[in-house]
Length: 547
Image (cartoon, one colour):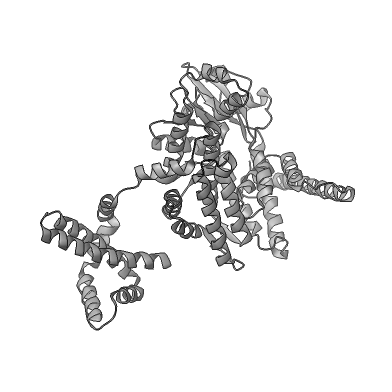
């Protein structure tokens, strides 16, 4: 079996040629339909036609559509919205084919591994479908089985997309869109979904980080391979089922299944679990739509299907945390500054116009969250997020895929929670969450001082600190302002920024000790040292922000 990037065989070439004709045929049909509709004066409905074509082309293009649905920094909002429907369930595959995959992967007949195996799938998607079963030890499990033959097709399609993207970029058809980069990112992002061992490790990692009221199913590694994943079966109801019961007015059936269900408690547990993944762990479930979230009878929340996950770098996590926290507490100017660091400008970027747009949109979202009479649509983050990402696209900026995945996951969380409770307010939950997890000034100081990097800086820089102080005092006595001295001094040597931070932490620590003595002298001295530390810290923060 071929893989992306491996040697190209005659079989691969034949498959490449066969697969290349399919998108060309669908593109020809799309053009013909567009022309006929134009002649007859009918609306084009281009997004729906494109979605239908992607569904017809099979797994690769369906996954491509799902990927593009997130790229609101590149594509119009209405197209992304239509492509988001590609996340809905796929058709079920014949059980004989599924059984053959399981027996081939586990190297033995089905009854050698499972006492009971339901032939009818309980869920189906583009890459796999899920069956309920019982192990030989009578444990209820969910068995996810990869659809046979889809990986070679995916590899062939990716090779063709690479060729097409290279040609398009060379002749400039795509304008400013870097199609080759998009294809590479899509291939990397999607390939990991084909390896269920990666998905199993993702589940284990999420379970290790889980909150008290968060459930992540246990993986049965002895019954799992790259194409078969066996996990604990979650005994609850998905949000899709819960929402359907509510919309149909069948709360009696809902409470018969979950007698202790409390929408408010379940919604808070769901929000806490997701926010903990985002802002504490930096590793999160990338597809928390209502079909992948289950509510248990004790109002715990369970996540399933871990093929899509996101991982934030320390830098990206800090920027996103700072941004969301700033919006949550109403510090909107800081929120704009943080968000501006999430995007990479291009040569066509109008940066000032972009800042003006996102400032307006952030204020709109915050204002809507404060209005008691605001509608579901007004309060949902996706409305605001669509406007912001529209501004990113119009002003030709780019965002990282994990950042986009974060926004999609946060939007899905907001939708799921709002669907359960009309009283859910994401900004309120965020505000409460940050109050609980963000350390106070003393804790932050302790974290800085106990950080190994701080210890290393102190050891390395201590011999230079007397000279640093001497130069500052000398220039200050000669009439230069303290602020100018500090900023100029920091600009001469990047390592001086580290000195300033070390001094700040040390001064704050000493001032707290002196102030703790309790007498007037101690308190006064402590306050003076705190003031000096604040000045140093403010200039170091300005310098760091500019860099």
